[in-house]
Image 1 (cartoon, one colour):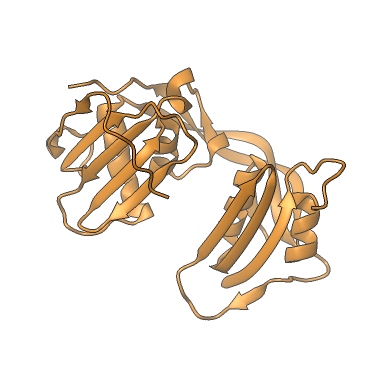
Image 2: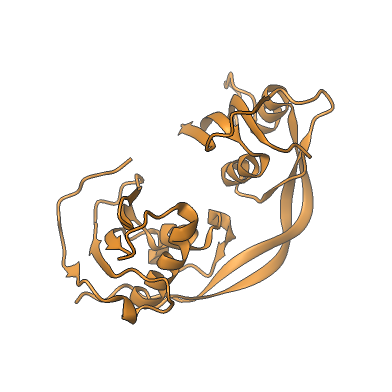
Length: 245
């Protein structure tokens, strides 16, 4: 959801693409500090290779630039997830961006404007395997071949999910984000699937909703099995607040 905020603080000047670290760089980019501090972040991919990001943190930028979940980022400093920015940028190529093609542009932006330096590490961590339950899947296979759609609503610990045409690796990633742990798809299910479910991550004694483990098993016909496995971690070596030009 896009959020409109009044223009505040100094605009970080538009700068040419040759200043950026890699070949895929925004032609122009502006960054404004946004002191609103709400939890609603807007990321809008617009026609003509433009992007508008509202109320985003450095942590959100890194996650989108490198395709990681929140718990895969290490070496954070206090302001990484506590200071907010509005960003307007365009590539100059004229072609609309996708979530995947956006990544190298954001990486260049982070390297130049935030002086970000990172490295990857593989660590042995607790993970979950998403497997097929003995009762069999309760999802419906989608043969239409449309782009996957996932609607996840969270309210006071309760999660409502509805998926249309969703591959299992995307479902596993979404469940991992809810649990704060990597979830690896080991269902053996190919193709795209429709499903819906309601559960709580940590239901209280008076809750009428099942836990995520029970909900996934009873409503999707899948199970979450705890095990050890390698996890790719992105470690921050250096990060600076963007200079105000």
